[in-house]
Length: 226
Image (cartoon, rainbow, N blue to C red; front, side, top):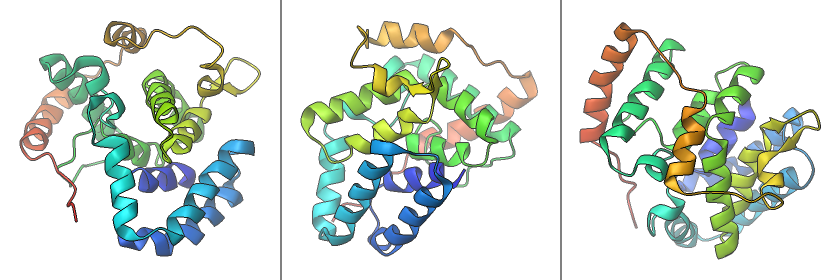
């Protein structure tokens, strides 16, 4: 699903080229029709704003949203495990999943980086992508809520990602319902939610993933700042 790829690009550090691609990104979103209603219009409004925003302002907006502490970090497992060994093991399992689906990482980005995860989902079958997304949707919804509380322009993007997972038979997203339910966003609660549907892989896949994880963790890529 190309919609996942568009959202991945928009949640990555803003490249100057992204402005030139904004029109094509909007065309893809409207053509695929996976995002609907307010989620679609809010993402398109973000794209229109990005097209006219000075590059330095775009970079500053991204840094303010995601690089001012851990509470809105785009590294998913950081919200559960911090920098503990458990986070490393969770990322090894995720990297093994990437490899089992034929995705080899050629960058030094860590596998739990949300834009990278969305890029992976874009290669999956729709029902499979939604299933994988559902495993981390509580974390994504939490980040979106925190950004919305701050009034950050990136909040609609996280809410759009969360809306891509249907909940129950009424096809409502967890993100939409999160304002109605009492949520427990402590690390312990998120950890419990992640462990409800554990992912298991064979030892060969895990050992192969361990080697790539070691290399990635030593060379975590930091975006260039202007």
